[in-house]
Amino acid sequence: MAWAFDYEAVVATIFPGSRRSVGSVAVTTPGHVGVFQYNRDLEKARDELRLSKYSGQMDQYPVELHYIADLPEQEKLALLFQANMAEIGIEVEVVRVPWIRVVDEMSSQEASPNIVGAFVSPDYPETGSILECRYHSRSAATWQQNEWLLDPDIDWMIDDALATIDWGERFRKYGEIQEKIVELCPSLFLLDQVEKHAYQAAYVDWPYADNPIPVEGYNMQFRDIQVFPECR
Image (cartoon, rainbow, N blue to C red; front, top):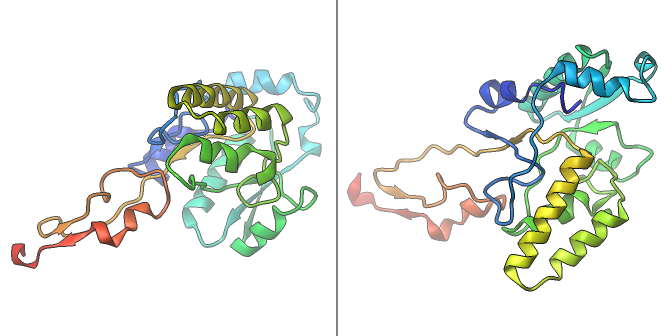
């Protein structure tokens, strides 16, 4: 699936102005490292599919993808994914669901659909936060992790990195985790979303409007926004 998806179409037409993800962590997050990046290659995708124990039986295993009803861009992503997977013989059923149902479904491994589209941001501006909330076992059964990775080695690596006080050494460990996750490929890493805001730059000073901040909502700290009416 990672080889079959059209990443360039996402950043060109669905989320213009955003950049492609490089691994599981947004590039603006302290501690991000450059890792292997999947690109659309249908022949490679078919080669990988032939190695699967489900090869030749894909019609018996349709994939169910749920997207959040309130987000029209996610519907476009879901339909693009459906079309891309059809090219390699994988049937995808796209299901529109309300947010509260997504939260409910992902609280149980049995109820979780095969794939859910989601944007997750770190709780504080460091790679450890997003690694923990996305791939640690303690974040399973939450809306942040439909992968149900449940990998004790990943858990240990994340806990060890978070407990490392030395800045450089902690970031080095974050890098090893990012490499391991992209090798496992439990998710499709699509894009680093960019928020767009319209404001009057002539007399409003909004320092974080144009500078990406990895923590959701941080750019809305109104104490940092200044208005100069005399400049109107």
